Image 1 (cartoon, rainbow, N blue to C red):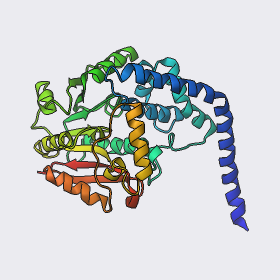
Image 2 (cartoon, rainbow, N blue to C red):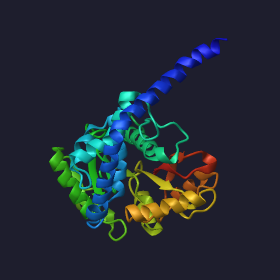
Image 3 (cartoon, rainbow, N blue to C red):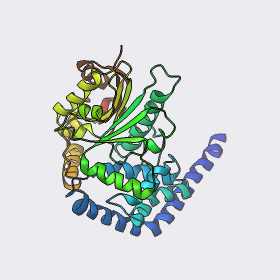
Image 4 (cartoon, one colour):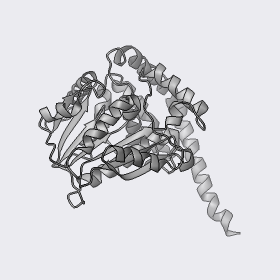
Length: 342
């Protein structure tokens, strides 16, 4: 007879939180819709024509919501967001207000949960990989770790703000690599936000057309030092040749160097079972919204880890960590770390 008495308060508390969330959103939602429309218009008619990454804003928006929800504090993202080309102060505040409604009510959903409950779902993918990369990056810069790195290279950095957060106190040298339009827009936003850039070496390049390793070497990168490469939200937009070239370069660097990256399922990108409907919807949506077609995927037919291990080994790397997006038997992608052993 005691079970109903111990369960009921939990159920009633959750229901109350949900009702408070709905009440707050009743007043905020019309303004959030207007902000989403204005944001989308800026993406279509401002950032896309200027070849500024649209997908970078998707990651930044989720991190802003996590920050305002209080589940993953990220003050640098909160400061940067109003200055991004598809935002502005009002749009940034209203997009972040999804998190405020969650924090004020105590009701959390996939966009505001952090750490993410595993197995993750499609809507919590960005939160999942953010937590994974936060963890492995913190391990890499730990001076008491097995292979502490001396350099950090963020490939396709977009609006990432870890250099002003998680990496704010590291002695490792930090390089941010991205295409010129996106990096130029970020540097302008950083200046507007008052975030210092003296610790960061910015390197402009295009993974698909230019040798990025030469570009960072020209800016002082030391190939003899163990390095951590963060490659978040990029592989799926590149041809397989470009992905192979990056992994080849990392496989030739100093022992202890490692690369952390995420990927989507080959079956998802090609709308094959079990992702026929989701794959078609995703590809259409990406082409329409950001004009960045999805190109590269890794097979997620079980066992997924073995597919990733083979790819790492083909480039002189060893799989050091891996987590699937979703359940192992229906993974729609994953996150991984591959290391250059001695």
